[in-house]
Each structure stands twice: as C-alpha cells, then as structure tokens.
Length: 166
Image (tube, rainbow, N blue to C red; front, top):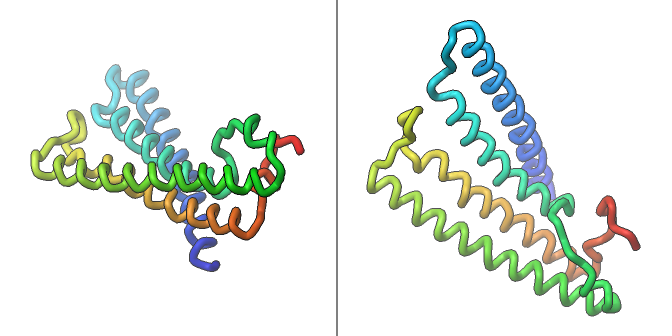
C-alpha cells in the first residue's frame, strides 16, 4: 500500500512542521512583547488554528499507530472471536461518527462561506481554518477502513500497541 505509506509520511511531516510553526509563533510573540512592548496581533490566533489542525491530522495517525485511548476491560472478558466482533463494532461506530463529522463539517464550511464570517485578528474567512475538521475526519475514515480490514483478517488491535498488557 504505497499510497498509505505516502499518506503516513505526509501526516508525520505536517505534524512536525506544524509544531515548529507553533514554536516559532509563540517564541516570536514573546520576543515582540519583550522588546517592542506589544505582540503580533495575529500570532496567537494563527498558533491556535495551526494547533487545531495539528490535532485533527494527528488523530488520523493515532488510529494507524493505535494511539487512541481504549477501555478494554469488557472486551478482554471475551475470547479472540468475541474480541474481533467487539473491535469490528467499535471501528464501525467510529467510522459512522467520522462520516457524520465529515458531512456536517463540510456543510458548516459552506455556511461559513455563505455568511462570509472572518477571523477577528487575521481577517481570513473562517472557512479556511474550519476546513481541517472534514479533512481530518476523511483522513480518519481512510485509517478506519485500514483498521477494519486488519480486524477482518484476524489481527487483534492490541498487538504492537505500547502499554497494552497481554
């Protein structure tokens, strides 16, 4: 799955790059306040939007690496087939939720475009930062399809996840 490897690399690069951008923005804010007595008007707002985008994109990667929090007490009471069924139901439920978020997020973006709402400090259309919501949901949908296929093949989701006792 070469495309999925490219997607993973893209996610990693964007996440690390966004961390650097946030660091530079906040450091720049501190320097401006210290030396000039006033920060950049738009710096904090941009850092906030970049951080939100980072969270949505990293959530997709967390599905791939098994980084999302899971409560497995009930699931662990079952044998392998029972666990597989529970994993399938959980993955399918998460998938349905992300379809809902992607659809409603896209509708909300179109609403923001219609109303012309702008960010207070930066003056950009609010539809631009909100684009990460359906984009992140769609990336998560790709990862959930991957996860669903893995569970169908008989791979237990615990395997290879750090911190999971067997």
